[in-house]
Length: 420
Image 1 (cartoon, rainbow, N blue to C red):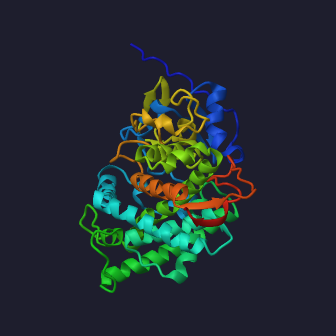
Image 2 (cartoon, rainbow, N blue to C red):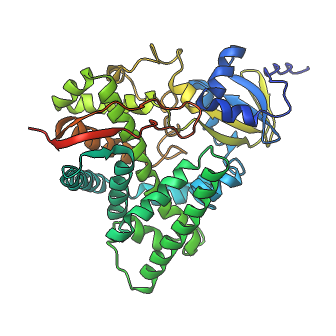
């Protein structure tokens, strides 16, 4: 008996659409899903066949490790700037689970409570400085705050005179995502400099010159052993430690978008000022859903399979639409409206809300997601309740082409003062 013939995947008849992707940014995959009236389509990017998928069911199949592998899915240019080489992002199977357990061991309630306290402390330090200035640009200031939080929490020594350079480097690595030309090369240079910095610190731990607390990421990663009971080489340990520090610095973007939301939707500020922890949680989740952060994620087909009648062949690169899934009208009521209350009844599916990736906690879901939420809750409650400031006329538009995006003015604040 013959099998059922696979359903043809809608496709773009183009030689290569890389430049179009760069011109359309976050709208590239969602726009074609609408055009084809399909959650799957085929195109060509960087000279290769690529299948793009989106929606809840697409996310669920994307995170099926029997069907997909992350090995070979991250372009070298992104490893050389954003992620680093040989980190947890490119592992799978037992090696991935073992390395992921190392990350998750840091996410205890005690350590997350310490992170919250550090976040509160660093915002208090910042306001003492901001009151002396007539104008504050929030985005770079938020990144500095996040860098201090990340390093102190991770146990990484950070001298005051190196704060600006370390923050700029970590920011440049993040900003290199989706970039070509100068932004990409700045990210590569910044990663090389950052890896040298962290390698030196880990070597000092192993030599006994530095003695971090045992519960810190620095201690954990410096002494972590792989499945063969070998210490991670210095380079890999440095990459993984940066995979704790860098994502915390990236929270500065979410904080800046959160400030934009408070400004653009003033009714939310009054609700935030009530101090209701449930509303703060909903507000944070809506910021993460509504504003552009990660546009898509990639994986390669592990072995031939069919999904919704479509054939997926081994080795094919598949992109999951992150931004489009978070704005999918089939999943979200009025997705282009900013409505924190939508999360009051949200049941917490690991596949319909994926601002930092999807999947279950010990799968490929971002281990820093809990960190992001906790830091944002403290930071946005601080901006809404602890300080007063004026928002002068400025260009608060943000590009849906530039990846990652940020308000063009970086959110300027004037006359910052402690709230009365």
